[in-house]
Structures are given as C-alpha cells and as structure tokens.
Image (cartoon, rainbow, N blue to C red; front, side, top):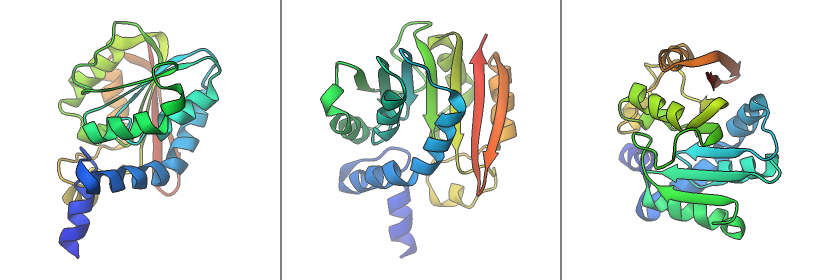
Length: 204
C-alpha cells in the first residue's frame, strides 16, 4: 500500500501516463479551496494578461478567466500530460483567450514585461534553482504586476517531502525572503487554517 501511495504522489512533480491523468483530476479538485481563497487576496482586475506557472489540470486558468473580463490567460507546465489536460479543460477559449504550452519556470518563453499577474499554485516545491526562477518570473511581469505563490505544505520538514519525489518545502517566511531577494516589493504573507499560505509580491 505504501508503495502504491508513493507511486501516486510521485506524479505531483511531472504527471505522465494514466496515473498522471488521475493525479491531474485529483489536483484540480483538491487544490480548489486553496486557490479560491488565495485568488481572492489578489484583487484580479478586468483586462489583465495573466500567467499560471505549473498550470497542471487547467482549473486555475479557468478561475482566472472567470475573474477578469476580456482577460488573456497563459499557462505553462513541464508535463506534456498537464498541457493536454489544461487545453482540454479550457477548449472553448483555447488560442483565443487561453494559451497553454509546455515549458519550465527556469526559462519562460515570453517577452519582458508581459503579465499583470503571475500565479504559482502548489508548484514552487518542484522548481529547480528557485532564486533563478523567481528572477525569470520578475522578468516577464509588468511594473506594478503581482506575483502570487499559493502553498499548502508550509513546513520545510514536512512528511510530504519523503512521500513526493523531488519536492522541497519552503516556509512562507522563506518564500517571502526569496521574493525580497529577487527584487519584489510590498511582499506579504497571508495564512488560513489548516495550513494554507499565499505569499504576494509586486514587481517594482
């Protein structure tokens, strides 16, 4: 049983195959309470151009689109399976208001100063060289744009790091310091029980 559980949760970082498709559906629904709460803190405005990094099954993209009239929402994920699922979930507006591609936070395929908002929901655990990735996020944001990191695992000694391969957990305080070091301003930590945290930063 332990091996089955570990195999399932190993799909968190890069879902693939049939088990990965199950994980994407699981994440779409289990991340909903965190995402709905966290996005309310952002104050999404109409007409924004937004990016969801690690877009997974595409539900965050759909939520962002609902919150912003005449928006454009981009999604990127390292997993081919995730990209396919996010495109399917947003099929009606795909390549019109929603644009999804495969790629990594290390090298975002977007021009400088493009986005009003960047979101990262339950994904920074898996970003290699997090400080460099945050610099890359900053690069593609507009001046005054917002970056929202939403996490549920907030203890660097979390048991989840033993269950999920390749996972590094960060405390909200660690993430805030990393945002400060990357040049973000007005950084804030918001918490909600049981362990939800949203860390917000603004590009200077």
